[in-house]
Structures are given as structure tokens and as C-alpha cells.
Image (tube, rainbow, N blue to C red):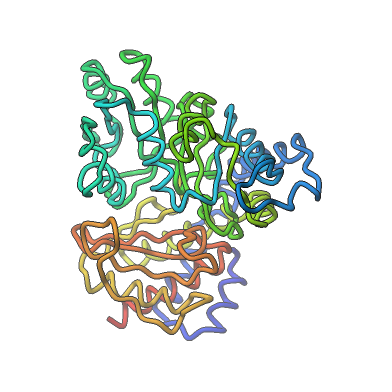
Length: 419
């Protein structure tokens, strides 16, 4: 975004002069070409997959019912496998969320009484709930579960190897920060985890929660030796068009285990209709690199704006990014609520509503969220959420255009000023 684009927004909307001045300074801090090469490499991966796949119009029709011989599903999963440098992909509407795909993969790869180890400390709230706390959590069926604490926000390889030496079946890596004050791991760092694990436990399966990280870098964790990645199809890969679903991508043997667990042994991945949404999935994937690039540019601008206003931000503007999440530390529940209500005013849908904190299934604390997505829960579209607990950080996510992200940030900053 250049200064002229910012001035158009400032002329159209009544922005407090102090915030407008900070926004003008923020635009000068952000280099629009800072991430250009990485984004081009991610885009080339997707373009190359489409060229190699050779999809025809007739492949997009989709099926209903059982979904036997669904060409749209087969083509879409083949595209994903190519993009991720993997043997096989399972991408289905029947995965209702990223958490669903992740827990299915963990359950499929853990033997009876097996040991699961989180290499990145406590996982995201909904996942920890599914592993430990919920009535039918994995530990309640005999899974042994341990966590390796992060060291200075990064994976501790020595502690990880020591934990694996005691015996482990599955090692889990959460790539994105989740609701923790830690940095996001790069794709290569996820591969480093796999190397450390295999040095002492070569048979262990390394699974990566890849939510929010797809197409942000030139490579994916599967390019660096992890066994499989899991995530949501209505985040980065959906390009704002996919209507739902989740994925597991990686080694064929691992994906087959997950398919058998998700459907039934003997059925594998032979079933699963696309219900006429094949075109949305494929077109969304084609557009995804551009949408992710716009999102990252917008988040850089938002980081620069709030840094100019004196708020602690992570990542810093212009820093290397591993996901589409921007953390802003606001310090109190009241300021979290003000931010969310300001951001809500920029939403294309439900802008007149005022978010309130409340209980959300799978979360330990009350959470306040802002969103008005065309696909409910599609955090590639602009949104934010924040658990009401110290250090009271808000997590700004997504945005299909950089202008929309900046407008949301301006409205959120104005709400903080008025609070």
C-alpha cells in the first residue's frame, strides 16, 4: 500500500488525527517488496501444481451421496499433494475444523496405550482440551501425554531428544503461536524437530499443526521431512472461497491411517462427496497465494500502526512471518473488548454488532472475538480473537486485501483511543 491509498481511506472515514498521523508514519515503515521473493516462490508452487495437474472443466462437477469416483476431490487432493511435496492428501468437507483433522490424525497414529509428546509446550486451547481435559479426551482412553517446554520461545532440541529417548509414538508440533506469547515456527524449524526426534526415536511419527502457516513461506513442513501436516481448508488454502473442511497431507501410510480412522477401516479415502463445491475448493486454492500475500502485507501495516501508537506487537513490522497472525499486547480485558468492537465496525457482514466476551466450546477462558466473514470461521478473512487472561493479547488474523486489514486496524485503534 502506498501513501495515496492510505489517504483515500483517511478521506472516506473519520479517523482521529493522532491515529491518522501514526498511520502515515506506519506506511513509511513498511517496505511493500519486503516479502516479495518468498511470496513469489509460494505462488510458483501453486501455479506449477496446476500446470502439472491439467484439470478439466468436467473434473469440477462433484458428487453427492457416498461420493465414489469424485473427480473434483481427486484432483483437489492431488493438487495439494503436489504443492506440499507430499505423497498423498486427504482434504474433506467431513473434517469440520482444523482441530478435528488434527485430533483424527493423532488418534489414528497412536497405538493403544501409546505415548504422545508435544514438542512445543501446551497446545492451543481446543486441542489441549481434546487431548487432556474433555470427557472423551485421548488420555482417557489410555494415551500417555507429555509436553516439552519451549526455551526462549523456541523448541528445545536437547530436552526434546531426552524426552523421546524414553519412548514415544507420536510427536506433535504446533507451528503457529495459538494463544501463547511465543513466536511461530518456520517450516524449516518444523523439519528440525523431525530430525531431532528421528535421531533417538526413528519410528516415531511427527505431525505438525500447520494452521495459519500455509503458503506463507517458500516451503511447507512436509518439504523438510515431517510425516504429515494438518489444518483447516477455510484458512489460508481456501483463498476466501472454500466453504468448509480440513486436511491431512503427508506420507501415504500416515494419510491412509487417518482415512481409515476418519471413515472406516477398509474404506480408506474412497468415499467423501464434494457436494458441488469442487469448483470453490480448486478456485480458492488457485487464488490462495495472492490472498495470503495481501493478508501478510496488511498485517505488516497493522503492526506498524500499533507500534507507532506504542503498543507491543509481535511480529514486528517487516519481520519474517511464519503465519497470518499478528499479536498485539493490550494489557487489560477492557482494552481487548474495545479493540474487538472497533475491528467489528470494518466487517463486510455484521458490522453493526458489538462483540462481547463469552464461553466458547473447547476454550478454558472466556474469549472475545470479532468477525464478519462470508464463510463462518474463515480466518483468512479479517478477524480477531483474544482469551481474557494475562498477558491480554489480541490476535489479529487474516484479511483478503491489505486495505481491509488497515481499515480494521484504524477502527480498532480509534476504539482504543475513545475507550
